[in-house]
Length: 178
Image (cartoon, rainbow, N blue to C red; front, side, top):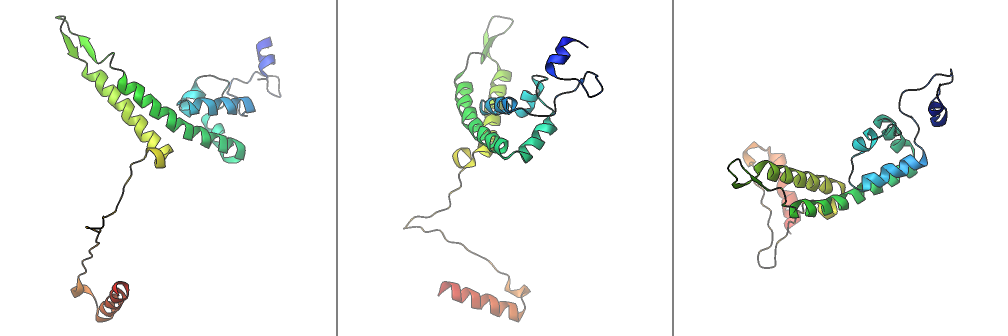
């Protein structure tokens, strides 16, 4: 048993070195996870970046059980949306690799790079719209103006209605319009 194992505390009750990831999240680990998420990193990328992080399932379980961590995580995800929106500007404005030189020395458009940039922008837009739909989501506005107010038309097939259904329908329609 080396001194590294003793310092990291990865010794089992039987005196064996535990090779797996830690299962508990320290306050420092929780803070680092939330800080990195707020800066646009995915939880999976963070957890795979270093063995000091617990497995994904342990983090998800901690988010369910620890109210403070859940709130911090949710806030970090909201901040991530703003970060991704800023990244979109950087990606869209960066045209450095849009052009390449072919074998004849002629400058040509690098379609693969342009498509990859488009994918990166579209992915960030989509994620931001899900994380902060009021700010980054698609806005659907249904309205009319004073000269052309919105009208809703409903077509009803009377021939498929019984007499009682038709009477109830007409009674309801008259009450709504009058």
